[in-house]
Length: 69
Image (tube, rainbow, N blue to C red; front, side):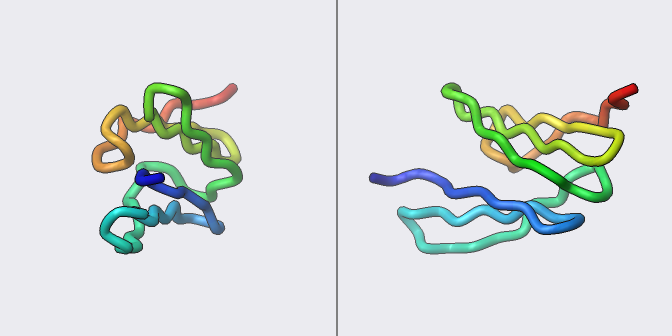
């Protein structure tokens, strides 16, 4: 199966492309990252302490951070 595998660690999100075998760190507009989710359409959602951000192109570009208050 080819696709991406995502994981988070503190203030970063990483992606492993199973087709190219390349690991890269994604630059996201929030600080501390607690969870990373990928929905059935391939949107990547990153959740932090007070903010979350969404990428609609597999983590290449991110929306502005949104406050979770």
